[in-house]
Image (cartoon, rainbow, N blue to C red; front, side, top):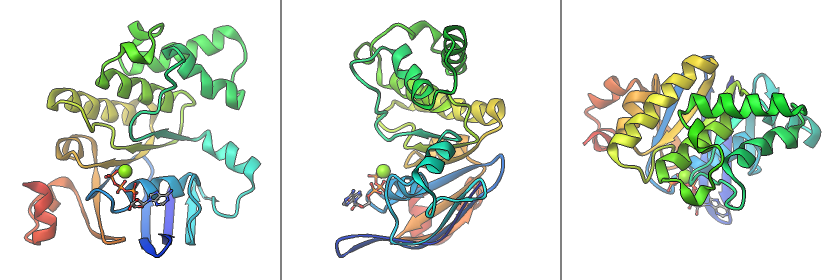
Length: 239
Ligand SMILES: Nc1ncnc2c1ncn2[C@@H]1O[C@H](COP(=O)(O)OP(=O)(O)OP(=O)(O)O)[C@@H](O)[C@H]1O
Ligand SMILES: [Mg+2]
């Protein structure tokens, strides 16, 4: 679903990604753990080409993202759902309008009834149909994350990138969002990358985890395998 090979990215003289390799298998939820500032969001943005990498290869659904023309890129972005760190809802638009936005931009549906159906289905899958006519300012942090998730799902993507889906939420709500990510994996048969600091989310929502340190992945395994690691740097995540 996603293949990243030997990816490099620097900002000025600061090397962030130093030869990253990653393979997202069909149907899996792959967790990415790493300290703040290590380059997790940069990696996710390279995958959708919101950031241009310096060197390396990225394939999404078998297609070379780096050498793609803008028109092709826009087409493939429809297959990728992106839950931005911080939610990134448009504050001046209602929940309904926020969700309609990607539909209109990609012109994937034009008939009123079809647009409504997609918006409603997407909100229903995150349990927030009630909030359809609310403004973002009326929503709690957890509800905003759910709306962000509904928006990421609206084009029925094959691949979903979750950037910190639970940060800033209490433990109970973060557990609920993590369960929701699992439900989405089932319901949408999607393959996902879940970037997180939240070990509860990593435990609930992932099938496999990679740990990034100093520009590269240093360890990989299931939550249980990694939690038994005797390496000090790895076990530090599990305390
Ligand atoms: N557009 C940019 N221009 C310059 N530097 C950037 C840019 N985007 C990210 N960086 C730098 O790259 C580094 C990695 O940032 P990134 O946002 O990927 O961290 P992260 O691992 O996602 O951290 P967090 O867990 O806090 O979200 C940081 O030092 C950041 O300042
Ligand atoms: Mg980040």
